[in-house]
Structures are given as C-alpha cells and as structure tokens.
Image 1 (cartoon, each protein chain N blue to C red):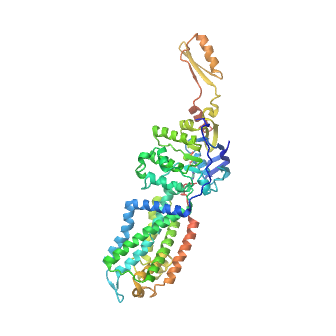
Image 2: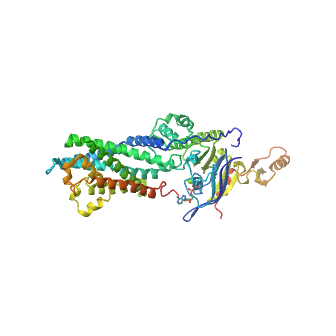
Amino acid sequence: MTQTTARTSAPAPAAKQPSAIRLGLSRAAFETKMFFREKDAVIFTFAFPIVLLVIFGSIFADDLEGTGLNVSQLYVAGLIGSAAMTGFQNLGIGIAVDRDDGTLKRLLGTPLPRTSYFIGKALNTLVVSFFQVVILLAIGVTLFGLKLPSEVSAWLTFVWVFVLGVIGSSLLGIAVSSLPRSGKSASAVIAMPFVVLQFISGVFIPVSQLPAWLANIASFFPLKWMCQGFRSVFLGDAGATLELTKSYELDRVALILGAWVVGGLVLCLVTFRWKSRRDG
Amino acid sequence: MRTAVTVRGLTKRYGDVQAVGGIDLDIHAGEVFAILGPNGAGKSTTVEIMEGYRTRDAGEVSVLGADPGRPTREWRSRIGVVLQTSNDVAEVTVRETVRHFAGYYPNPKDPDEVIEQVGLSDKAGKRIRQLSGGQRRRVDVALGMIGGPELLFLDEPTTGFDPEARRQFWDLIQGLAHQGTTIVLTTHYLDEAEALADRVAVVAGGLIVAEGEPKTLGGRATAKAKVSWSDEGEHHTLETDTPTRTVLELTHRFDGEVPELTVTRPSLEDVYLQLIEPPA
Ligand SMILES: Nc1ncnc2c1ncn2[C@@H]1O[C@H](COP(=O)(O)OP(=O)(O)O)[C@@H](O)[C@H]1O
Ligand SMILES: [Mg+2]
C-alpha cells in the first residue's frame, strides 16, 4: 500500500499522566480480582493454615501449666504470624511467574509506573493476609477457646506487628523472586525457606524447645518476631512466662521488624530484575 | 517529512552471536515499515532495542525524538508495543483487561471500540485463558493500541494466524495507518510485507541486505525480464531490458499469435530468497 494522502497526523495534546497512587489502587483491584478467580490457589492459600491449625490444635490440646492457656491457643498466634508472612511466599512465587510468562515485560512496555506495580502487589498481599488472619481468629475463638483482647493497646500492637510484618516479608518476597531461574521452579525454590522458617520461628514448635543455635538463626528473620508479637496480643501477660526471656520484648520486635522493612527495601532495589534471564 | 525512528550503526552481540551487526534505519512518521527476514535474523533484537527493552552495544537510536535507552513515562505513553511472545493468561476477561490497561494512558482509546476493531466483540466477556492462540494475539494487539500510540511496534503479529484472521489483521493495520499511526512491524511472511508496507528492510544475519518499496525491492522493477516462447516445439528464452520490443518483433515474425508466450520478471519471492541466502 502506497497511498499516504488520506492519512491525517494529529499530534496528541500533552495530557496529564494518571497518578501513580491511583494506578497502584487500580493494579491492586486487578490483582485481587485475578487472585480470587484462581480457585485452586485461593482454596490452597486459605485452607492451608486452617487445616494446620485444626490438626495441631486438636493433637496438642494440653493446658500450659500455671498460665490458664492451652497449646492450641499458642498455635493460633503462631499461624497468624505465618499468615502475615504469606506475602513472602505469594510475592516470591507470583513475581517469578510474572517475570517468566511475560506479564512484567508487557507492563514494562506501558507507561505504568513501577511503583504502581508494587503498590498493587503490596495491597493485594495485605488483603489476602488480612482475610487469613480473620479466618484463623474465628476458628481460634470458636474451636479453641481463644479470647480476643479487650484492651485497645493490644489491638494497637496487633496492627503495627501485622503491618510491619506484612511489609517486611513482602519486600523479602519481592527480593527472593529474582532467585528462581524460571517461573516453573519458583514454588519449589520459595516454599523451602518458608517451611524451614516456620519450624524454627515458633509457629509449630515453641522456640524454647529448640536448640540454641537454631533459635539464634531464627532470630535473624522476621517470622520469629512476628509470632512473638502476636503471642503478646493473644496470650497476654499470662503467656509471657513461656517466652525464653520471660518477656515478649516488644521493643525488640519493633526494632527487628522495622530493620527488615528497611533492609528488605534495600535488598529489593539491589536484586530486583524486571527481565527474565533470557531477555537480553 | 517527519522522522519517527532513526537508527545509526546499531550493534548488539550475545556471546558469540552477532545478533545485530551495524544497522541504519530511517522510519518516517505515518508510514508502515516492515522489517522482513528469516528466523534469527535479528528482527526482535532490533525492535526491542527501539522499544527500550534491550540495551545496545553501540550505535545511535532515536525513537519519537528520544533515546529508548532512557525511557520516560511520557515517551512510553506515545508508543505501543506488541511483543513476539506473551504467555501471560489470567482469569480476567478481555474487556476487563483492555479497560484496565486503558487506565495507564493519558489519552486512551475507547476500550469497546478497540475490542471491536480487533474483532473480539463477541469474546469481550470471555476470560483470556479460554481464548484460542489467535484470539489471544488479538488481545495483545488491542493492548498495544489502547493508548492511542503515535508509533506502534508489532513483532511477528500474525504468526499462527489462519489466512482469514491474517486478512482481517491486515485490514486493521491499514485502518490504523490511515488514521496516522506510524507502524513498524517485523515479519517473515513476504506477502505480509508486500501487502502492508510502504517500505521494507530485509534483514539477514544482523544486517540490512535490501531496503525500499516492496515493488522495487532488490532492483526488481529494473531487473531484466524473461521472454519465452516456443518455435516448432523448441523452447526459447530471452533475457532483455526491452521485453515489449522483443514481443513486437516476435509478433511480426509469427505474423500473429506467438506460441506459448510468457513475459516474467523475478517475483518478490525470487528476490527475497536470493537476498537472504547466506554468502557462500
Ligand atoms: N537474549 C538472548 N541471549 C542470547 N542470544 C540471543 C538473545 N536474543 C537473541 N539472541 C540471538 O540473536 C540472534 C537474533 O535473534 P532475534 O533478534 O530474536 O531474531 P529474529 O527476531 O529475527 O528471529 C539469534 O541468533 C538469537 O539466537
Ligand atoms: Mg523475533
């Protein structure tokens, strides 16, 4: 085709770019929609901690001496810690898959700001973690006699532990998403450290029962501190005697979770790859 | 004539492979420009450097007046990209996806109109995962054009299309071109370049081996014509610059009809195959 006369060239008027925050919210809605439509993944994500809670809570129902608490309540607090760390797994795998199947590459070709992509992922993670926590609490209360705290201060603690924990572990998840060589290997690569962390951070086994060197390793990672923070919220002062140091050390919890948010951000900025290994 | 893309001395090497070996290009605003070549010729590498995806080893590239090595949001919102391969399929419908992407741009086209233009109106409510390969390719094109780009890149857009789908796609591209969109497309289909392009660059082994309007490509318009006929059962062929005179002479000699007369020039395919043949 050679005729060029009929073509009109209209230079686009300089229009304003949409705001990065608004696009982040739009991404969050889109990601959340996609998440809840992947039926199998949804069922797995929500059923996994519930099944673990019901199994562990039913097997180990003993009372904890001199505290008026029982072991299953300990599991509720621990699994809430796990739920707050879902972002590590979801983002670690999700972004690796996005990178592999071309989602990231497609987005990179649009004017979507990179921050909007991350805002979308972060909000999506918050929503998913929040639902998990609500479900775990409901089961804890109805089946295992968990008492929700009545003081405002305890809920304030819950909020900052939850928010710092979700953000820190999400950033860590974003950073590790660059490790798997492909989307296919992602779930294997990411799931392993997550399971190990759960075992050494007091989710299933109280930290006081671990050898000191394992407990020391765990104390470098956020999960142990998240679980400790959630125990302070849901077990209250009575449970403090069960801690290694006879205290929930909330100041250290805040310090280390805060450090992970900063460190995780740095790690992300250093390691994050937009392109997969085969894109030159 | 305004220039949309200028490329000078572009090179790119992957290990031992010289993917692009020194390419110069000038693509004018408003034209349909085809980069034609066999697999591995360096088409995607060249185009993805122009799209800001890949870094270059050497050379100068200017796309809509900017260096694609430093893409900005404003620049991104003026170009549209259809990548060669995209495997991202999600549980979202065509309409949801196109609408969502429209939000990224300051001056998007109407999503329903774009869906109509790519011929997916009756599939607009379907989830992308349920679409056929050819239908997903149209979604790619819809997402590439939703921002109302001044310049649209299409990397092998019709690979895997059936003949009817290709025909419809050609109409779509011609329609966009008439509205003033500059189009850069790669293809290994000769007929596609011939049908769509105002100008073609033939690439082989990372180099441009010919460039021009399809009908003049490789000196086709000026090449010697072949005149053949038969004379008392014997076949004759003559290569000549003046086939009309030859035919006239033959007409006189036979005093009327010339038996089995044909006049041919090398087909585009003959020229093309000769051009991309690796040097012996
Ligand atoms: N990311 C990459 N890593 C290594 N080699 C590559 C990469 N991309 C392209 N190549 C090589 O560069 C050459 C040109 O590839 P490409 O630009 O994809 O060609 P085309 O798109 O024309 O088929 C090929 O030999 C290909 O193997
Ligand atoms: Mg290619």
